[in-house]
Image 1 (cartoon, rainbow, N blue to C red):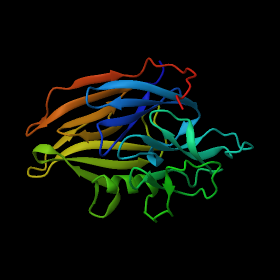
Image 2 (image 1 turned 180 degrees about the vertical axis):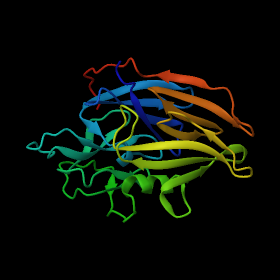
Image 3 (image 1 turned 135 degrees about the vertical axis):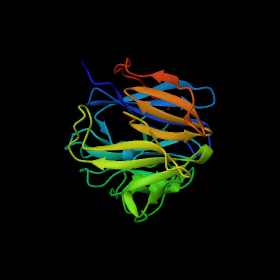
Image 4 (image 1 turned 90 degrees about the vertical axis):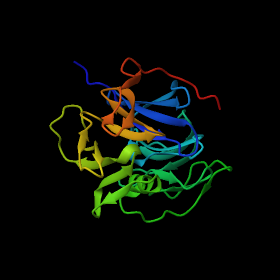
Amino acid sequence: MPFPARLHVLLARDAPSGVILRRGPAQFVCAIGWNRANDSFQVGQWLRGRIYEQRCDLSPDGRHLIYFALNGRWSSETKGSYTAISRAPFLKAISLYPQGDTWGGGGVFLDNTTFTVYGASNALREDPELARVPTQRWIGGPHAARLERDGWRSVSGETAVYELPAPCGWSLRLTLCSGFPSTPGRGFLWEEYVLVHAATGRIHPLPNCEWAGLDGARLVWTCAGTLNAARLTRRGLGSTTLLADFNTLQFERRQAPY
């Protein structure tokens, strides 16, 4: 049996939009636009290679995506790995920074038009409407910077455990894990989530959850190639709504409209 698609989501901070990065099979990634106002979806583009989800970001207005990709074409102008900025939910680069390894790469948006890139110094091309600024030295790289910017706080000084305040007295707890997991289909780095009630200490597990976040008053999360949502109540999660199942998507060549 094939493994389900793996999903990671980037939510725009100031707009009802998001981008879903769908991985599967292992050598293919698809970027999908999410209109959170009506829970509709738009397939953007596919990439043959690997996108490192934890090194990606979405601009506050949801218009631009920054991502770090590996395609292994080491003799090409992108040196086999690169950081790119595109117009979400597409992947065609409007700014492009060759990296050449996986030690660095990726970036974060500081506002709608200002961003920072980790590692790469020289650009193959840059969009004149976007401004790059020097990298700030966040411990944990782009992922930690994005979490802290979006309201997550480290727990007891642990850089691998974060909590995000949620409605009805709950917090969403994220644990960053690494190693060789026992779960088939999981990579060296993965995330685990639970809900924690501040007053009672009660823990509400989110089994098999790959990514979770808050969209207003509802919790949204991915599991086995599906995107789900539920309202938070004092007792925990309300009824779960399946927003989309992306398992049936298959690679296709698509042109960006720019």
